[in-house]
Length: 404
Image 1 (cartoon, rainbow, N blue to C red):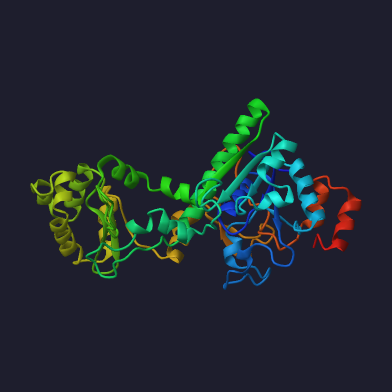
Image 2 (cartoon, rainbow, N blue to C red):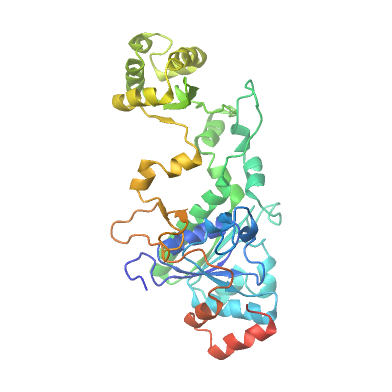
């Protein structure tokens, strides 16, 4: 056991698949929890098959591997009564249950939150679904793409209406799933703190739709406060200027000028100190009102040299700016290397394939890469034994087709 990890000794029964739930349980595993990932015999988590690319050693898709380190895989057919009974036993042995089945479906197997809490009131049960356990859409399946559309995010993502290629666009990664997974971790840790004080667990009901609405942040509050409907603005910012990407002689440059002092330094670095005195650009409100004119001035100047040239000047001046990196460029950046953001996918094979590390940097209880993403059913027998399932039962269930 890793006694110096935050969540050492915590047992998590993971009945989730795809991304939001697995992202949550991977974070708990990163922090030291013993996570049992329960999967369908013969098939497993859907994302094992969401490739190419596939890992040559395990045969699993790279998609699956991004969200399932620091877990053990157990194959149980809980459609079989003996399989459902086994999961009920495991639930009584753990601290946290995470599931992302459609609301109501686990009740058929006596695994619904209210059924488990009646038997073990100390449990913390986190249910993740598309639309939650209440409301008119509670029975509808939820997918990140659907929720980005319904939750307003796509309406504000993509080129502006007067730009080429305009139209609603999803974010390049499944942000509703990932954001929900992170909220789930926060909720679980808060519920565990409550349990430590009172001895009582509880049920967390998280929905992708709710989390997507909360993610609208300033855009949601601006609509509620002022009634102005947010629009797509491409890479521009609705309330700050200049805060966008602009072309240079070679490559695009991102400027993130958040105050008047930074704008003054930008003007000096670009060789145009007079812009800071121009009535059109003196303060942020002026720059917003004259955004098009400012963009023309910036674009004309930046076109005279490549992005790298301007970055050198802007970095020296303390102006927030960046080149637009590809994924390989981002992962291979010196900052990523210095922060240890790439690690061996399998900690026992340091010369093997790499994965993206946890971003959590804890000084006293550091995150550890203890287990690679498990192969399907890799730990069925050992994990069940560790969790106190009698040996005779472990050896009886495979004959019934319950375990693999």
